[in-house]
Length: 373
Image (cartoon, rainbow, N blue to C red; front, side, top):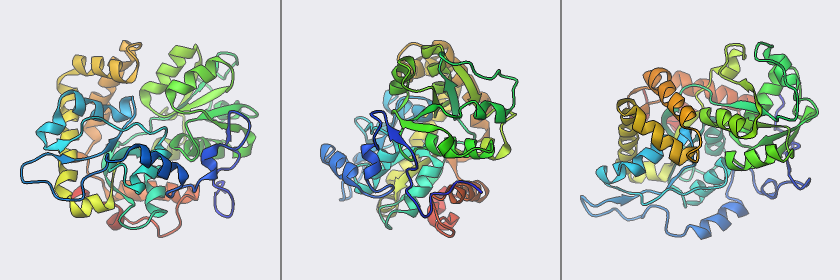
C-alpha cells in the first residue's frame, strides 16, 4: 500500500536543516497559511486589477516563475517582449521560495498564474475554495523531469544497475528536497514505495531549489538531492562533482514513475471566469515562446544558460534545447491543451499520494472548456 498522508500529518518526517520541523510545516499544507499572508504583504499590488482594463490597453497579470527549463517559456516571454505583443502587463516575474509558497500566493491573490508540478496543482485545487483554486490550462511537459543526484562523498550504484538497487542505496541517508509537499518530495515518496521502501527509511530535508541544493551537497549537509528539472539534474551533478544516481525518465524506471505529465499551467479560477481573454493571451504568449525555441536553437540555448544556469553550463543548455525540440515539443497539443486521459492519469497518482480524495478532481471542473483537447 502506498504511504498515504490521510489520517496523519502531511509532512511526515520532513525536517529543516536545523534538525527541527520546518517553519513551513507549521502552516496549513495547502491553504492560505501565515506564509501566504506574510508573503502577500510583500507583493501588494502585484495581483491583477479587479477592474477591466480599457479596450486595447495592457492588462496586468502576476506570474510566478523560477530559473530553469520548466520556466524557460516565461524567461523567453520577458526577453522577447511577448507579453507586450499580447497586451499583457508583466514587468517582471515573482519568484517565491518554492512551488508550495507559489500556490499559497496564488490562492491569496498575490499571484494570478504559475506553471508547476501537476500533482501540486491538483492538491491545491482540491484543498482550496472555489474562485481561489487554480485551474489547469494545459501541459508544458508531458514527461517526467525529476531525478536524484548523489553526493561525491558516497559510492553509488552504477548506471546499469536496477531501479530498486539505486533507490535502496538511499536507505538511512539525508535526502534534500526543495520544500515540504513539493513535487520532488512527492516523487521521492513514490520512488521509495516502488522500490519496496518507506518514507521513514530516509531523512528528507527541506533545502530549497537548485541554488541552495548545490552548497548543501558540497558541504555534506545532505547525501543526495531530488532534482526537479531536466537541466537541474545535470547542473547539480556538474557543480558538485556528484553522481546522477537516477533520471526518472530512464527506461529502467517503473512505468508509473516515467509516465507523468509533470509541468502544468495553472491560473486562479476567478481570473479564468472574469478575464478569460487575459488567460488566453498568456497561453498565446507561451506558444510563441515554444515556437521560438525550435526556430532559434542557439539563441534559445544562450538565453537558457544565462537565465537558468548562471552562465556556467552552455553544453547542458544546448542539450536541453535539442531535447525540447526533438522529444518534448512534438508531443504537446496545440496551445498546450490537456487531454482527459492525461488529467485522469495524474489525478489517479494524486489520489494515491493521499493529497486529494476520491472525487476531488474532475476533468470538467479542473480544465476550462477552451483548454480541453
